[in-house]
Figure 1 (tube, rainbow, N blue to C red):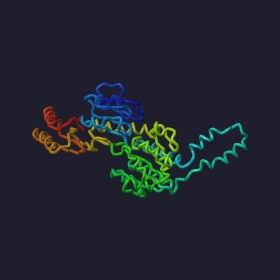
Figure 2 (figure 1 turned 90 degrees about the vertical axis):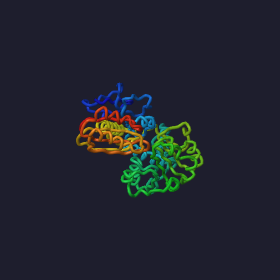
Figure 3 (figure 1 turned 60 degrees about the vertical axis):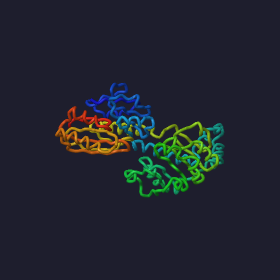
Figure 4 (figure 1 turned 120 degrees about the vertical axis):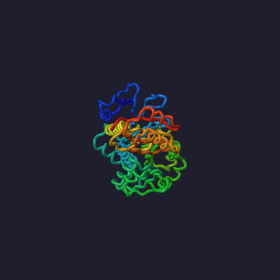
Length: 392
C-alpha cells in the first residue's frame, strides 16, 4: 500500500486515478511515500525520511526546494503542458485587450448617464467611440520568447489569426521543435526578436538566467509601441524598467497575470489576478497528469517530467526491479553490477541516465535481491538511495 499526502485541494479527477486497493490518499497522513501539491510551500525539512517523490499539479516548482530534494535523491515532478490551453486562451484575450480600447471603453460605458433618452445616448456613443479605436492583429508580428508546450500553442493560435510569428528559445528541446509550426521564424537572439515584434509574449520558466530577462537593457531593443505580454512568471520582467518604458512610450502596453505595487495604476498596464491556469479543465488535467506520473514512479520506477531527474522509462516484462540513485561520477554502475555478479544474480534488463549531478538507474533482476546485496550497494560511496520494486 502506497501512501499519498495532498497539501492542497487537488481535482477529484486526479485523486480518482489512485486505486483504493493500492493507494491511501489523504491530506493528513503519516509516513507518506509521495506528496502531491499545487501552491503549498515545501522544503526538505518538512518531508519525512520515508518520502520517495514529490509532484506538483502545475508547471512551476518555485514553491518547492528542489535542490534539497535532489540531494536526498527524491524526484520532483511537474505537469508541463497540462495547463497550456488555458494559458493560451488567456494570451489570446490579452492580445485583443492590448490591441483594442476594450478595457477603457467598458469603463467609459459603465459611467454613462443612463438618464438620457436613447437617441441622445446613441449620439454620444457615436461621437466618443473614436477615443477607443485600436488595431487589428492580422499581419502583425508576434514574437514568442520560450517555445515549449505553451509557446508552441500560442504560435499555432497566432498563425491562425493571420499573424506573422517569430520565436526565440536558446534551450529548445527536440520534442518542442517537433511541436512547433514550421511557419515560425526562429530568431538568433532576444534583441533581434524584440526589434521585429509588434507583440511579445513570454513563456519561460523562472531560472537565475531568466530573472529580469526583460529589463532596462533589453527594452532598448523593443520596437517602439510594442505590446509586452507576460503570462509566465512575474520575475522574468523588471517592473521598474517596464514602468519607465511605458512612460517613455517605448512600450505601448504591458499585460500580465501578476499585479504589482510598482505597476498599479500605471497607464498602459492591464493585470489579471493569476488566472493563467484557473480553469476547471486545467486543474483536472494537471491533477491527472501528476497522479499518473507518481503511480508510474512508485510502481515501476519510471520517471517522466521530473525537474531534477533524467527522464527514464523501462518497459517491464518480468523479474524484480531495483531503482538506484547516485551521484553522477565514474564507475558507479560497474561497482553495482559487480555486487550482483558476485551473488550470481542475473541482470535481465537495465537503463541508466544522468542529469547534472544525479544519475538514475533501473535494473531488472531474475530473482529478488537479498538484504546483504542491498546493504553492499548502499555502502558504495556516492549512492544516494536504493529502492526495490516488486515482481512484475
